[in-house]
Image (cartoon, rainbow, N blue to C red; front, side, top):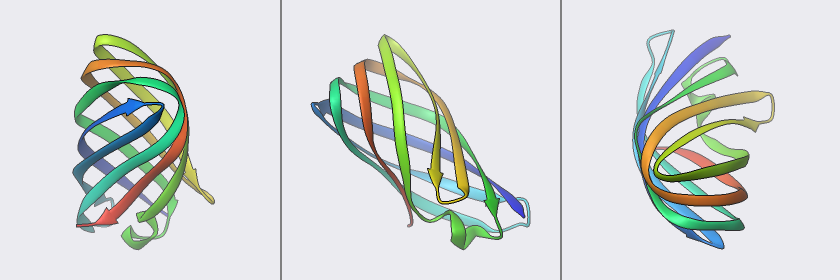
Length: 120
């Protein structure tokens, strides 16, 4: 098993429907590296516009970088005004992605959606 590390920037908006896009880099402990495109899509009771800079993620239970690509299930709660903190654990089968990041903006509510990682 290999552990992979994600660094990313993400910005988006939500008003009932949540949408965000960003870019990042994944670096695995076995030396594999990939530039990636990230998208977050979901619904729920949310309202706001936000940006996360220098976010991080740790991907575990993979054998190589190809296994990190795809859609992860997301369930989270956000709360913040001006400064917002995000911490979530997402899953894709047995693969887990733990995300953390601090950003700026306004974001209130609860949302459930999809977090996608694709090669860039």
